[in-house]
Length: 355
Length: 229
Image 1 (tube, rainbow over the protein chains, first blue to last red):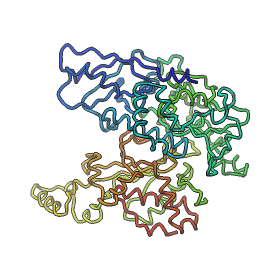
Image 2 (image 1 turned 60 degrees about the vertical axis):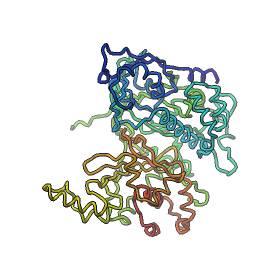
Image 3 (image 1 turned 135 degrees about the horizontal axis):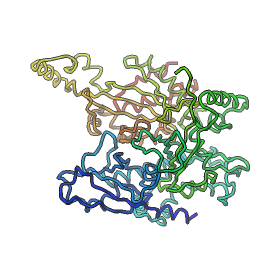
Image 4 (image 1 turned 120 degrees about the vertical axis):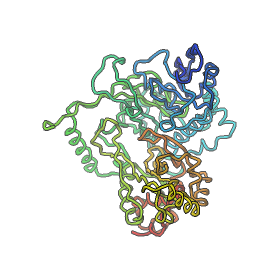
């Protein structure tokens, strides 16, 4: 387990950063800055390393730093590795980005005041993850000041050992060690753990913090280079919703299962495993909604289902049959969210003949 | 729903039900305001239809919330709305300073109530702008908030405003942070015995919730209305 996490923490993207031409006031224009950006880090954290490279050429004024990729302003609170996985279907090395020190697009991007903003966003996400996993944010809110500082520093410096030391106090656990020791077997079918109750008698459900970024294509493409360029954030569907893991006897909950559970309108599943159905005692009632659903789906789509073409996590594309628990334990980001970049091929929609 | 063991949260299906009930109740309780609408949100920008779990949010836009609204707005005719000569404008401005506001500086609000799957509670997103479309920044909004009640709420650990990206619209909006919501919603319903007796939690959830968070933006919901069936 340590091996994979180490690779994730050590992963980095080579960036070639160009100053936006409108901000170049000297001739010859400065060369682009070359920097290795940690995958689990954030672009604003690179600014202290980039700025010296350009400061002599900048126009006078106050810095409001932002980045763009082929004109698309980059959301600074998304970890660098995820931006790369999402926006570069065919990985571009080095990744060519443009930096701006002026003219912050405040109508599109939320404000960023350097490291403090990034830290705040990180802690906020960590609280959200804690809430999803434990049902409350207490462990994060009760962190001592030195622990908070050390946690943040471990992320900035990519120090996995230090991070583990502090974050283990947060009791955010790992999927798998709550259920069974063996990560590779069907560790999720242990009945006793699904039904585990804590001291208040409430049943713990396995909720996993996920951030899903979905982009779609209408046709098959063989080469990722042929995949359409994402030139607007409106082309990406962002889904911030936990995955509920319900172990089934003898079955392993796979990565594909997890992705499909987050996209129910494309993958209507036979057993409704959401809260509404779990309250339903009557099996007949349970059947009815799914029957209606499959009728409805048939009327909209041809026999082709939507197809998950690509799932990219931390720059890798695991086999979709991989146990989801392994993915969660090893590929999660420091704020305890698993970020999944998914490319979906849409089913062919029947076009009515009278249009 | 057993009130005593309820943890203050809602499933997404319950939120949809609560939203329907809320829109109805709002029309009768807050008739001075325009009605809320439900904005269905296909998750995908390419317009997926067919959903057994219709995602969406509640929207109320272009409203005046603050104390400017009820008292002064009717009395002052807005300079922008009619053609006025220079001197007329000056007169209006003089009147405005007496009542502490200039009509063109009355902020309009857009309110969205969006379900958070992480916290399993509704979250208030809002933005404000002047009649000329100029958006209000965080400091301006803070100044605009009604003094006492909002300050108390903002100082508490349970409610604070952040600027975050709207979950659907890819734009920065203000958001009232949700992490304490389930706790105080639970308290709210424990305190109100009549609600516990009638077991009408879902129907009253959003109106009760908004009666608390709405105060932060100057929205006042008369509490006695909540006890109506």
